[in-house]
Length: 384
Image (cartoon, one colour):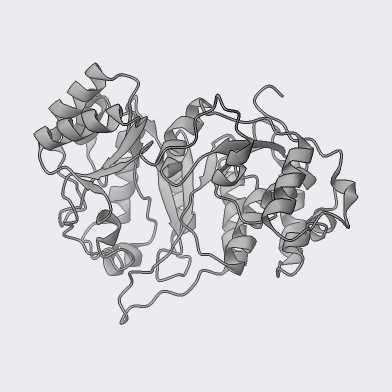
């Protein structure tokens, strides 16, 4: 079996990072026992390889996947990890007419799709009702324009209304701890309501891409494994994992940085629980040393896609004999990846190894001079 710790320590960008070697050995054994389906491939969504695009590949556009909010920056819940601040930079579309005009302008500017969301009411429902006919009109007029909807909590009738309006992908947060729902979300709903929502959504024709926010309970893992059990009972099209970044948390309810080693263990549990389901690590996760740890564990756990990888992580994937794909993408594609990755409809680049090495030398300290053994590691694209 490949020496994972040895492979990790040969990546100079990661040589000063603290890893749990017992955890890595455990992950290697568990990885070896997984079925070899598509799990050997990993797709990195990153703008850092944009210089290797040919002149025929358009550079990633700022408005490729804009986020629109039907409530502007208003939200009744004021969850402790967000305080509605996530809505503030989104494009406000408070009326169906405004939504229609805005989408037409976005498409004219080159948008490929959008995230449609809004603030919740006190029951964690986003009141999309008046907008469904306009969404249907958009899909009829522009069938190639993808719409990902943050559903919040729904019942069967609400899920069917979303499906009939033409929504491409339904996204929701799956929460498995009652105290998190009550304390962080300030919500009088039950864990069962989240599972019923998931069940309602997977019974439609929409692609269902739930999120698990790791560390949502003030930075502690609590309920994530229960959420994973829900996903096993109602298997979605893909799962997005993010790690809490509580920059908006109130001073009276501070969040701690999640333990990266515990996050790594959860990644591995998620891969085992859903062996044939695409697992994507989204943009939201802590920065600095913790990101190096989290991203490395994600690769070792068999994550299917990773947005904006930390330094050295692409090399680590290659050293662990993963089939590495690169999709040039900037921040606006963070939502789009969740829709497009499911269709494998991306502008994946097949990169020559020497081009990767040259890129790494140019963009960070020269780390490869000591380790010429990297030569020969296969980096492939869609045609592999």
